[in-house]
Image 1: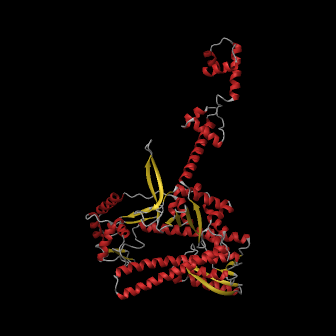
Image 2 (image 1 turned 90 degrees about the vertical axis):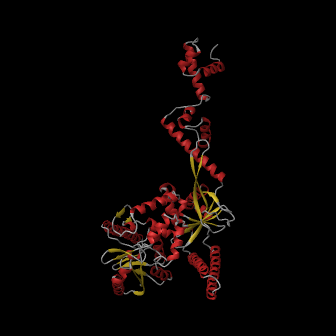
Image 3 (image 1 turned 180 degrees about the horizontal axis):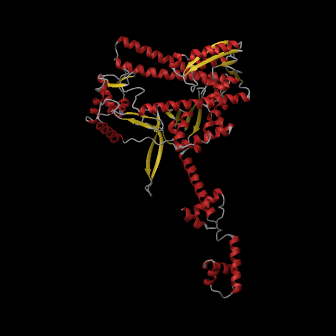
Length: 608
């Protein structure tokens, strides 16, 4: 048996102390006692909840090359505390290559259903154990916070002695807080203007330029008026008089009131498209979901409208300038997820990949383009160095260009790695339609089972990015699979007329069901009475019947043949009793109003 030893700890402290050495010694001794050939030892110092780890990836490379028969670890939780999707991916690689998982004294054959079941249980237990450990750590941190013992990174304006637990003012940076407060409250500077003033005097403690977000953080931080506050998941703990004062509580309250007055900011309401980082296909700039409110002309009622568009100011260079109501997209996205999961033939209409030779050619072409783009960026960076040495351009301008090119180079390298990984997976037939279907299974009935904030989180995790091509009326969702590759899912954007027709039909269906529920409770009422009860015209209800079928338990219309026959029978019976009865008395006895009585008697010749 060829064995790959895998060892892992979560923190650097565990590595430096004893844990990795102990694992290595015990596993090596066990492998030798079993007479196994040790191919290599792989180690990671990282969380077991992460799939992408250097040691694990290097080991899986050997597994896929067919050089390993068994993976040996001290316990399975060293190999995986992964969530279900990532665990299935890792398990699939081992199973497809006939590789077993071993612990000292136990071997798991993933091709055996019972062994795989036990392995799945161990992974679930490992996840539960990790959550328990985090809860215990959380309780300890909460108690430490309640006692006013600081932990974690501290503001740069304070010095913290870990041995004594004493906090003192950092005199070199103590001037920053009153300086910011004065500019904000007295001179009415905004965060960006304050950041510019600070950059004229100093850098941040990390040696970089101040940004407006850092200024806002200083304005909102409670430690500067003595409070040590930590927001935990279900509890916020505040302890006063922990830090030496750099601003008064009165000044802090004035600052918060000023922030509220200037911005009157409210968090955006949850919407599942807000979890997606959308970009414009025309100009490549970011798109946002902008919420606006219109008022009805008749009832003056508020109607919210959410629109996909460029963030302000509007990008004038964009040729298409997208302005799309989210209703044109959200229903199509829901339908796409449902269709992909329920109908394999429809799935191929949405998924922009054949996972075949054509796709290999397409990805290979992408790789060539990205390699060329990478080379061009590197040449631009090299030319900047020459310009810097010549001294013909200002250093600040060259530094700005260098940062921009460096960021573009990082993005290009990430895309290049992703495309190469995708090419390898397609060539090795490790990714196909079934992979995408399995990935999207978690979203089944997401619009029914989850609330809006949960929908936003789920859809954002499945499709972290998207491209809106308003010229072609398409939204391309970039699904990020556990294999760390993207697969594009194309969705047609509805026209506004299609949206109106669909919404009209949905409202009619809801009205029809509401009417039927009322009829179930009040059987035998007329159409007119039903319309009055639910607030609509009888004609509208007739149209709904034509769309969705006749109502049950509705009183028949006066012109109904069966009802006519029944009324004639009742009239004849009363006339036999008293041929000279008046029309008024006949109406009282039969319950039929006089106008209809007169018509029926005349048409049927009931009186001679």
